[in-house]
Length: 255
Picture 1 (spheres, one colour):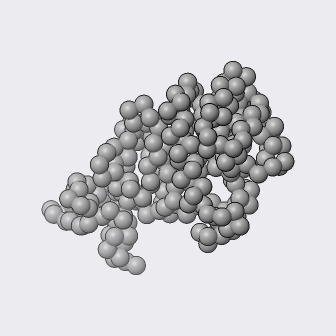
Picture 2 (picture 1 turned 60 degrees about the vertical axis):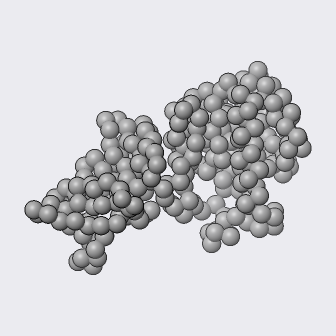
């Protein structure tokens, strides 16, 4: 594999380059000190993966990733940063991993593992991933493909959005509930409602979004509507103001 390392801080750039050069799976590691220099390097040769800092002057890491994603065959992106607040946005630019500084060698090796697996799934260079998915290159991914970067035990992991059964607001945060765990994100519920509507998430209460794919039963008692999630999941109350929409979406009433 051919890697590009991007960081505006010379010590961090030197250390990350050194660590990656020790990994025998990388055939070449090319360091650059800015997002602009990274784009020049990407134009000059084939790069399989970009390991990039986020907070940089000029073209920062997120902006670089957005530009890279417009390529006909974009390289994979791994963010290496000291700032955890960007983890929520990482899934929007399809980052393979999100590694916190200072970087432990074992954690960096895990990131390379994910890159290797992602490249293996991508297939031969003659096949465009976007075309395989039925999309023109440069178009956004299907909502169900998106992943959410979450922190768990000091490690950043990616959760498939399709595995999220419901979401509840908790002050300035939201908590995502999957079948086996929950994850807290600093993000307004209204933002997720707009972003995830196309993936089948609907609001059933001022503080709750539900993934319709996980609804197993619709219950009504004493004039109150509720949804029971699969398998043997919680029963969530539906506010009166959202009852009509829920009936239309879940039961097909009024369609």
